Image (cartoon, rainbow, N blue to C red; front, top):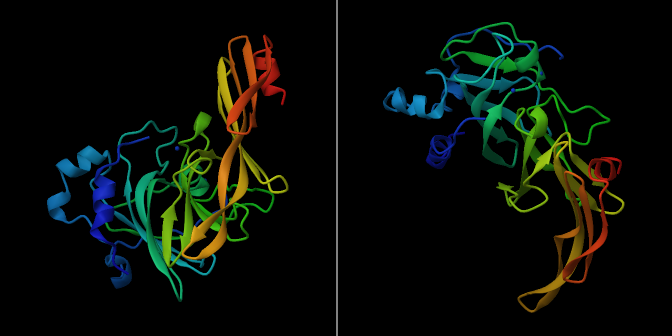
Length: 287
């Protein structure tokens, strides 16, 4: 259950960017032998390296009390040092999470790790080497994307298989949560970096499993954009076989700036302007 060194490089390359049921957070100082395998940054990486990362000169170990979708989840977390806090004990950190099941295991870097208890409820300070035994916060039954939870599994590409969504806490639009989406296949977790999976958050992303569309919205009272992606299928060749493969197409878009409003729909290889008004804000946000 050891992490690859490539994760350290990924951690050092990243700059800086904020949970209601109770956790069970033990206050033990010494990590047990299994969690000690998560130690990646040794003494020679402390000091300057930690200052560059904007994290405290400490590391905490994470162990979830419950399995999640068949995975035992452990990890190591480096609390952020320099961000504005509304409460003294708000907790956000850079974490490496290890997922392990009977037939699979993989590691995920979580740039802004927290949940609704660690952020909104926690009242304790943490010390270097402490083990956090955490109760997992699942997403609510009526949520498509989970707000309170640090990670969850959900089918977001309409293929019948659940993807892993990792929550970058309060890093979306207007302090919403931004998600990184991982496809679990061939015993690996593959980050999905193409639209619409690269800009999902819990406030402005809408799913339609019937039409197989995902709608992404970003903006303000002055300027806003909306893009609707639809899942399509095309034929290609694999060796001597004709096979079908899914892809995502930009099916339509809407935009406003001040009083100008424009709406586009796809026709063939082009996006055709189908509506243009001076309604601006009202025309955009009434949809």
